[in-house]
Length: 322
Ligand SMILES: C[S@@+](CC[C@H](N)C(=O)[O-])C[C@H]1O[C@@H](n2cnc3c(N)ncnc32)[C@H](O)[C@@H]1O
Image 1 (cartoon, helix red, strand yellow):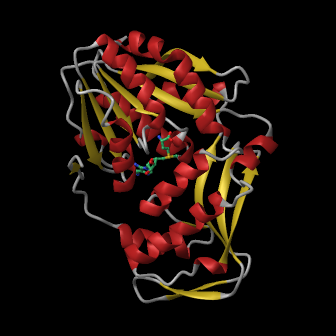
Image 2 (cartoon, rainbow, N blue to C red):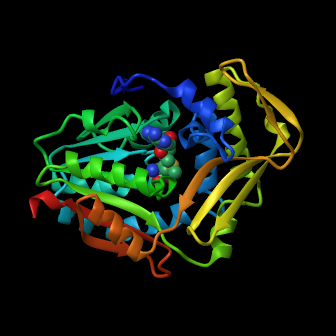
């Protein structure tokens, strides 16, 4: 197994205080990144294979169709994927990059060690001209400490993971990317589009209940991290579509009265019906994207979409070089 390189911006950790205030807030929430421990990453892979989760299938279809054009247009000599997960969809892009270059470096960047291991296993046999680097880090904090390269780099952020950010977080993330991009670098961004509400809702409420397991697992992760006493059996999975905000909101809804002991030893009462927000998944319109790109100093140079207009991949450049 290839070595995992850990990076961290070394910021003073305010995590405990943050968890306490998120749980004490009237609108309770937990940071989405805690969905992804070993089990969470495995469950996410299972979600991607469900009939209802059109996102992965559709994005893969677009990549398979336009991969060569993406590689040719970006002149990519190396690929840097943020929140890579298992890198399944990336394989085609790497193969095309290898057709154009003597050797290619692929950076798999994720917060989950399990995801990095899956990524390595997915790609390690592709070619001896492929150099794989596994980087464990947090894309919300660590982007400005990434080392740059003399080669043309294609940054990628797939799976509509950008949908997990509200406007402020999305602008920060996209601005961080445009700041680190050099003149010959490009950025490929996968986004889920606004569509029929029924199709979206089904994707987060699969018949087999895998998304429910994935959602509840966040409680086991924060229990371990902060020595809390959540019991996942005391909550139900609740994913609903907020039409006004064009976003799925994934909650854990309390089905019994319970008390949680917080890291500062305070007791927090949770009543039946109380909800904890674990993830938002925004669906984007052209107008919202244009606004976000503009605010983040990114310029779209190509947009690839499937026939049903369910999902899009944008190839972007940093505005500072125009
Ligand atoms: C929605 S999944 C997408 C995975 C993959 N890109 C795909 O398209 O299937 C989000 C990925 O981002 C990773 N992730 C979540 N929060 C993160 C963070 N703060 N920093 C780095 N990676 C993170 C997760 O471990 C997971 O692999």
